[in-house]
Length: 314
Length: 314
Image 1 (cartoon, rainbow over the protein chains, first blue to last red):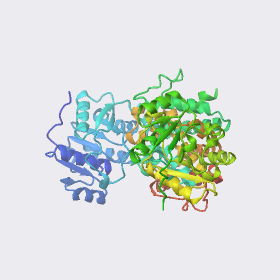
Image 2 (image 1 turned 135 degrees about the vertical axis):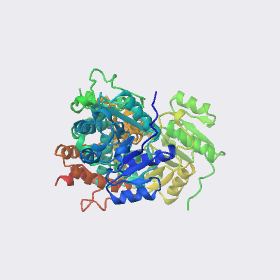
Image 3 (image 1 turned 90 degrees about the vertical axis):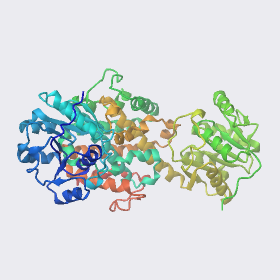
Image 4 (image 1 turned 120 degrees about the vertical axis):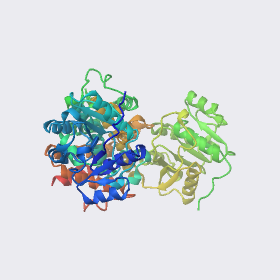
């Protein structure tokens, strides 16, 4: 079903940070014969990548190499995409598969459509918290088994879609297809929200002078995300601000409801709430069907107006 | 330094749930010659413990065995303590070491003092999330390496303190001493708060119909606590309600501050906040010295009035 990559033409990786570097390493270990070119305007990043011995060429702008590419992986920040599309990207040959790891699919596909590349760009968002930033943090196994949510405009032909799937499988990821806006709203809830809740918990413990060592190993998992800084955090927050705000408010309200129940010593209702969330947390895949008529999609934003423990207040 | 356990007299374990059962298993594997008696009014729990072959006797009330005990481990709910102290416990010999695993030390020591046992009771609280409830969930390694916070009235003699430490080390725990109220306030922040934040996050995701499978493995750690129900949750909440309420409100406010910054697109300030919490989360032991003059203790409750990200609003 999956078309193999076209043998001719190099893979060009735009951006040699932790993600671009990891794609490079995975490609070199699984497809050693393929020419891989790195594009990075930062001389330090380029030097580090060249030192690794894995790249034959670094092309600071991409001008010299993009015309021959069979696959282009945009692994740079979203904010660098307009310049890329208007500059060297404009010279891309029609046959090249274009893909990215920005993390949010709708803003990428919007820009790509305005630049005239909608028919051959497959945007990818890995369900992954990067261990740090920069080429030195990259590793060949970073994408191994990681779910990669792919989105593309309807006009992208099946052959390109299959090629994109094949390319991402080659470097270890597990591709699945999703509507871009649905993905991005879900990412606000499933990635940005847990990260910020971990930071908020760590911040509250810090302000209360509770040392990290007072936490049990189980509780310490709750501040593990706060130890990391996902790559390109700021611009993901900017791009997903409305959904993330709704999600933050939803958790904040849930905590207030629990605090109110506690103040009224209605501990039984807190336990009921815990039972319900335990059900969700232990299910392999709950889609909200059991939430009793109040089923909402993340996109509807209704979760913010009706936090889960709210029903315990009725 | 640590006095060995007195060789004569059985260890009596009151309560044969996950904690009492685990103490029993650890004792049997590390001190096989010692007589261990179980006390549990629940015939089912008693039968399960007897079936394990590890107990020689189950004494439903304790009346027949407590008079000979050298060590009594109260591993039952806090709510069962008054009845125990007024009933069979009243017959305890003066030489017996009395200890518990209730989880909050101040309420135990208050009751113990009223019943006249203040001079030989050492209350213990394990920094542990139990994997479930009941004897069937017990295991010999449950307390291995687990920090156990011990508290006792000033009149408990050093020999008893040393004996308590020795007993708990024998079953695998790592005992440390703490003021009981300081411990209990810290437990509200370090144990109950992370648990409820995990539940609140799971509840919000559930209400928004975000499936658990949408979370990255890293984000999934944030809902791992919601999969468990710590033993005796309700009564710990009741007993630590004020401090837990303050802690919940503190995290709720922190989330609101982040949501406000996001609504105003002040993402730089969110990143600053993340940097500060990252510093706390990666420190082996931060005691709030670096929080810039606003150092507070959990007991002061001041954290609720000044959540960590608040300074980003100034």
